[in-house]
Length: 129
Image (cartoon, rainbow, N blue to C red; front, side):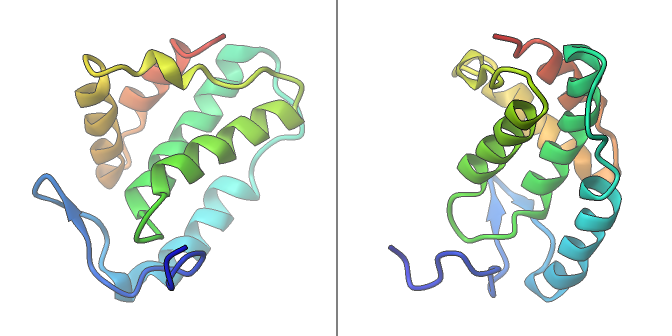
């Protein structure tokens, strides 16, 4: 385990030339994430498409915030799977995001920087098991 495991990152990070929010803003970004995305989650969803429309923005935003130095993708995927399972749905089929679809996934995360969640919603709608 890393010494920093489980703690908000204290360093600035970038990936492929894309800068994640600065570490000094993480506390407020995580608080906003909780208020906007977590507290507004309904207890149930009508169907898979409704679930995907609500969960995809949450997933994209969490990955965009990139709160940890390592494990953000695994954490975000596990998190949305747990939300789906708790509400009576199967896990999302993230295995469908193969090497060919990975650039679309990354672009969808980067779109969250501008609060554009449509690319991630489109992707999530295709992840039904």
